Each structure stands twice: as structure tokens, then as C-alpha cells.
Image (tube, rainbow, N blue to C red):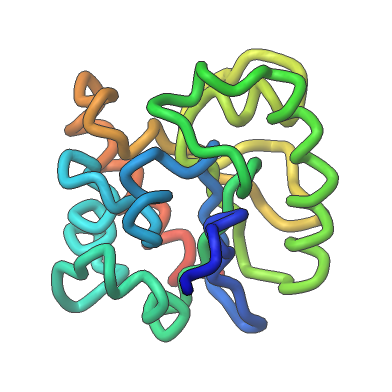
Amino acid sequence: MSQERTELADILTEGLDVIISGFNPSMVSWNKGYHYANPVNNFYRLLFQAGFTPRLLKPEEDVTLPQYGIGLTNFVVNIPSANESAVPASVYRAGRIALEEKVTRYQPKIVSFNGLKLYSYYFGKKLPDFGLQTETIAGCPLFVTPSSSGAANMYFERRRELYTELKQLVDRL
């Protein structure tokens, strides 16, 4: 008998180049058990195009990301939803402490928010611009990209540029 899922587990280990944090698991990811599993999500394509991975990975390969220096987490690991707005802002704000603890424990070179509103939830103010921020998370530099969700396609070219910029920054650190 299978056990009911209570969270979409983080993929984190020590020595990572970057921890990428999303909002919360999508319903597709929750049901399949893999991060960024929705076929319209551009996450793995962006990683590949930016040079983080040598080939286009499938969501089922999410556990291999640490070998490429990438770790995954979400502000909220135990509440799946169709989109980020279905989860109350107070729940995201409460995820701040857990994220700080993870960053402190794993000490990546950089933290990246996969979604501009994550910055607002974390810092309580509007994101000034995408890219490298002046603020840090537990002493680690912070980089913000638009969400990789297919619903955020208005940012497609900008996302690709930012993931490439993130990769270049990781390589310099």
C-alpha cells in the first residue's frame, strides 16, 4: 500500500553552486512526484539552454540535478496548487525561516528565486529588477528570475537571458 505524499521533497546537498527556490509544487509536480513536471514549464529547457546541464533533462531526472551543482526547494513544500496565487501570502512569508535554515545548512554559492513574487514574499517589498540583488539569503547572494512556468511566457526571452546570466555568475563565484 502506497503512502500518501505529504510534501515534494527538496533536492539539496552540500557543495551546490545554486539552490533554486520556487513557490510551491504545482498539482502536476505533486501528482507525478517530480519538480517542474508540468510539460509547459520551461525549467529544464532553461537550465539546458543556459549551460547548467549538458542535455535537456526530464522532470523524472530531478534527483540528478546536484551532480550539475543545482539544488531545488520551494517556499512551501507541502501545499500543491494550480498556481502560486492559490496559497495565502502569509504561508509564503512563513517559508522565509525554512529557506534561511536550508541555505545556512547547505551553503550554496548563490540562491535563486524562480519567480518575481518570491522576492516580495521574502523581503516584504517589490522587486526592483530581475537578476542579482543587493540583498542576500543567509549571507548568500540572491538572483531572481521570472517564473519558469508556462503561464509566465511573456518573459520567455528575458528568462533565457537571466538563466544564462545566472550560469555565468555561478561560474565566476
